[in-house]
Amino acid sequence: MQPIILDVDMGVDDALAIMLALQSPEVELLGISTVFGNVPLNQATRNALQVLELMGRDEIPVYVGAGEPLVRKLVHAAAVHGESGLGDAVLPDPEMLPAGNALDFLIEGIQARPGEVIVVATGPLTNLALVEKKQPGILDQARRVLVMGGALAEAGNITPVSEFNSFADPHAFHQLIKAETNMSLIPLDVTHQLGLAAETIAARLAGRDDAIARFIRESTRTVIAFEQEHYNYAGVHLHDPAAVALGIDSSLFEMETLVLDVETMGELTTGQVVVDRRPFSDEEERQGYPVDCAMKVDVDRLMHMFEHRVLGGE
Ligand code: RIB
Ligand code: CA
Image 1 (tube, rainbow, N blue to C red):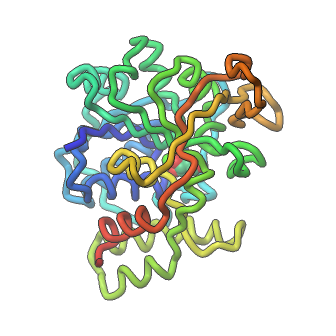
Image 2: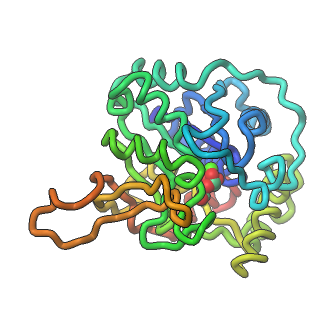
């Protein structure tokens, strides 16, 4: 089994990513670390505890990470995910308590199994930047660091050019890219191809009134309403499940190494991932750092994997 640590900011698609990890026999979920992002840190931690209990997996520990970005001001995404971060879903108060500090957990979890653990980051990269600063080189001891974030040739989603996770803490993103940790990036360029339509959710969950089915319907309803209003799309994009899917089956994606960096100061461009595509004869002239990026995805295979494992049915 593939040991995985999920670092999440606990919006709806983070919850769907946790569910995919839990429903995947290939995955050994070692624990979850929380970070501010879609919702404030305390809410993200509460959401993670609640989703694990909903799934009957309260043996999986949750660790508390950073509550604010390294430099810039705090930003959340309640408009997309609802004030709770889990849309309209109402889950019982969690009985579990957080297990401890996320930075210690990430460092100890990676060090305990050198070269084995895949860290999947689906929120702002503050926790990962802090562990790399606390223990330089620690992320290179992971098997891989899979990051959902950035918009390369694709439009942004929080600004015209920036994706939310990179926008929420651009300094953390820049520091990780500069440290040249063994990161793979899953940008909006591929995740915007992974739309889960409202009608598919309805069809897959038809006739089910169990707690998990109710949670999926009620949590996704808010995101669907946002997407419908702003993008005329009746569905949910599987941004965070895509990062988990890469950890499960890398053949789902085609990767390309791009030289890039993240804007940290622009008034209009903070969080923008800037790719240097200039056709220099000497690639060393390019500005930025080499990052392994997912540029193509087998949409049908990934969507079927997710629907079958999380929504049920064939
Ligand atoms: O831009 C999409 C990403 O930002 C997803 O991880 C979503 O959950 C938010 O964190
Ligand atoms: Ca997220």
